[in-house]
Amino acid sequence: MSIDLDQPGKTPATNPLADKTGTRPSSAIDLAIRYGFLALLLGLVIFFSVFANGFAGPRSAVFIFQSVAITGILALGVTCTLVVGGFDLSIGSVATSSMMLSAYMMVVLEQSAFVAILACLAMGAFIGLVNGLLIVKTKIPDLLATLGMMFLLVGLQRIPTEGRSIAMGMTLPDGSTAEGVFSPLFLSLGRHRFDFMLENLLPAPVIFLIIIGILVWGFLELTRHGRLMYAIGSNERAASLTGTNVNNYKILAYMISGVLASVGGMLLAARLGRGDIASGTNLLLDAVAAALIGFAVLGAAKPNAFGTAMGALFVGILLQGLTMMNAPYYTQDFIKGLVLVIALVFTFSLSARKAGGH
Image 1 (cartoon, one colour):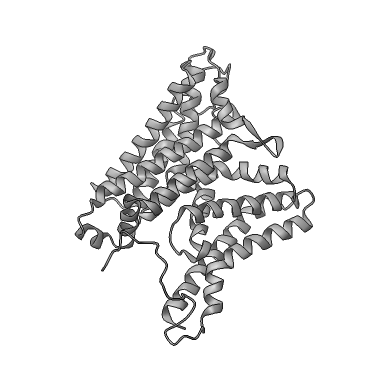
Image 2: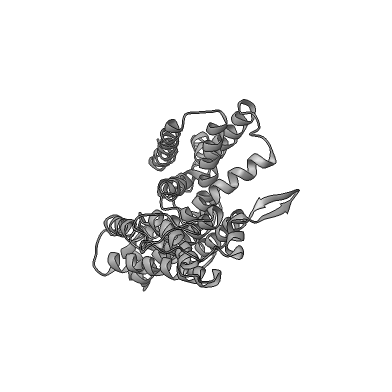
C-alpha cells in the first residue's frame, strides 16, 4: 500500500466526475455524494424558515450556534479518535467531570479560575492518556476501554458531593457551607457575548468552537502528524511499516479528545454557573452524531473537522427547528437518529456503488 503523506488531499488532475471513456455515467451519483448533505442542510433551513415562526433571524441563528458550540467541541475530539481508527465513548463523562471539577475547585476549595482551568485541562489530558495506554498497551478494544472509563468517571464525579450538584452556598456532606464563588472571569467564558452586527450577539463559546475547529482542521489536514494519523486509521500495519510510531499517535488522539472534552465541560459550567451532575447526559450522543454525520459532508466518507462542524450545525438546526415547531421532546431523539442513519446510508451506500462501478 502506498501512503502519500505529502499530498493526501490532492485532487486528481482528471475530472473526478468523468470515467476512463470520457463519459459521465456516474455524475449524478458523484454530485449526490459530494453535495447531497449540504443540499439537505440548506433545505432544512428553508423549511424551518417558512414553517417555524422566528426561525429566520440573527437571534435564532446565534441560539443555534450557542447550542452546538459545546457539542461541536466534543465532536472534534471524537473526530481525532476516529481518524486513528478508534472511538472515545468517555467524552460525555469527561465533560461532566470537568464541569464538576471546575465547580468544586472554585466553590468548595476556593481556588482561582486559573487554577480551576489548569486542573480541568490536566484531568482531560490524564484521562486521555489512560484511555490511550489501556488501548495500546493492554490491547483492550477501544470501545470497551472508553466504556469502562465512562462508568468509572460517572461514579467518581459523584463521590466528593455524595451525588449532589455543586452550587454556591451549598451544604457540604460534613454539614458545613461552601464559601467559595465562581470567578467572574471563569463565568465570562460561557456567558460573555461579543458585538457582531448587533450588540451582545455572539456568545464566547461560539468563538471557542471556531478557533478549536480551525486548529483541529489545520492539524489534521495540513501537518505531517495529522496525515500520519489518517494513515494509521486507513491501514495501521502499513503506517507502522513506514516507521510511524502508531502507539504514540493513538495516545495523542485520545489525549486531544480528553482535553477538548474538558474544555467543553468548563464552558458548560461557566454558562450554567454551577456543577450540574446531569447536564452532560446528552453530550455523548450529540457529539457522536455530529462526528458521524460529518462523514457525509462533501462525500468525505472519513472523519474530518469541517464535516464534524457541519454535522454539529445540522443537529443544532434540526433540534432548534423542531422545538420552535413545538415538536414533542420525545420525538427529537428519534428524528435525530433517523437523520444520522440516512446520512450514513446515503454516504456509504452511494460511495460503495460508485467504487463498484454500478
